[in-house]
Amino acid sequence: MATTITYDEINKGWTSFHSYEPEWMDRLGNNFYSFKNGNIYIHDSNDTRTNFYGSNYGCNVTISANTEPSTIKVFKTLGLESNNSNWYATLNSEIETGVIGSSTNIKFIDKEGVQYAYIRRNSSSLLDFNELSIIGIGNLQSTPGSNQYQFTGDIPNQISANNSDAVGGDKLFLNNGSSLEIGVISDITANVITTVSTVNSPSVGNFCFVAKDAGSESFGLRGYHSTIKLFNNSTSFIELYAVNSEVMKSYM
Image (cartoon, rainbow, N blue to C red; front, side, top):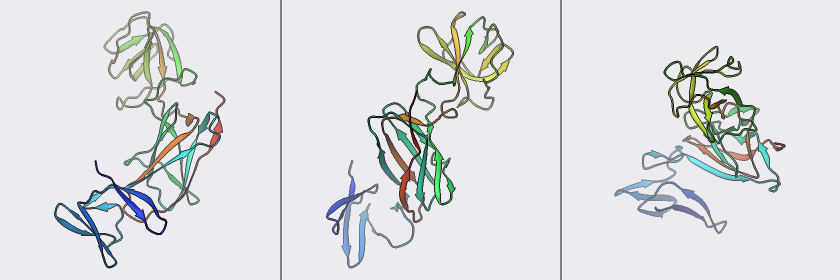
């Protein structure tokens, strides 16, 4: 796969990567031209940004936050000194992955000119039994109906049902030596939990527990460092001056 990169003659170095792949490029006078599929295009002829050959590519920036690299930290927030709030981000560390919004679900909000958002751990992250979001239920007593699981005592009131869909929400798990998902909880009645569907069928006597949605319960991203990739699909002028993060030492 070809890559288009920019050489800056003033700074004497390669400065940018571009998503578009022209067949040929040339400059005539003060104008820059490129060819694609036999057609000629003139660049920088209007105010529309990151749109090449009729397709919008957006822009992205990748940075690394690695202050005190020998210390495990919690990255709690991101603050972007930018004139545009339509950013979303993915984050990675040696321990976890995180996210801030998506292209269709922008989470950054403007606070005194800074685009601010909380970092959420991906809901697909591994179960962490050090977290309060893991709640033990007890041994399964019976299965009174389809996708229904009965226990001895009443279900703790901090467990909630998700009636709308099978994405997100609290999940019921079994443990038979390995932790396996049973399903997303759709209803709770006294000592009976009902799931939307059954991913793994438990046996009577299996110990069961509930894991609350990792994204909703997230406190941030843990790790020695974080690789942050910022995305923005705006076609207008965008300025990104600085990227800040609230970071604290992890005492887990």
